Image 1 (cartoon, helix red, strand yellow):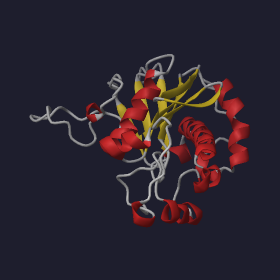
Image 2 (cartoon, rainbow, N blue to C red):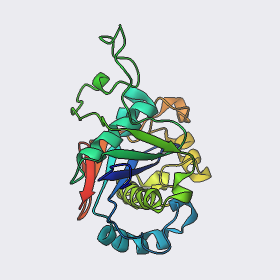
Image 3 (cartoon, helix red, strand yellow):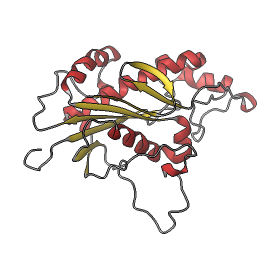
Length: 251
């Protein structure tokens, strides 16, 4: 980092991309050339038990100079597509950091964080463009170089740390939403296509926290559960809660 002139590197990973319900969440961990080695035991969140992830969180928060988890709701995913929603969640997370990074390291093979160049027909807001959101909260583009690395969460401890923070934060959201919609078993399946979740969808139909643009069971005669709850979710550094949209953060 120091030889490349990078003062602050943002390590980024996402969770919830393949879920049927709930938000997609993007975790960011900020490090500098002076940051010490990550706490022992940090690795891709998918390789850790829920208990192991939770045990790591206090050490990660004490270690990282800055961190944030941004979210895009199921409604936002439906409006702008999963790539646009990932970008929106990532922009929210980066905007919440205590320092703007000079460089971003993104897990995967595709840079979904950088906004595409405007087209000749930019006035027509297509799927994936956050401006298509009727209640879009303007975020700042991440105008810094982005490097992608396949399986970065396996080889880079800072990206693995971002995945752990994103996973534990999103899991807390899904547990809270399970209290509003107990039939779907979200406290266990976290919104993914488990047999019990699919069975509940067939019996009851989707609720407002489901991604309607995805191929999910419609329920009997298109049944649909509705609650007067916000369609975007936010978790703060001191706990979890429902809100309009945003990022949890720390420094």
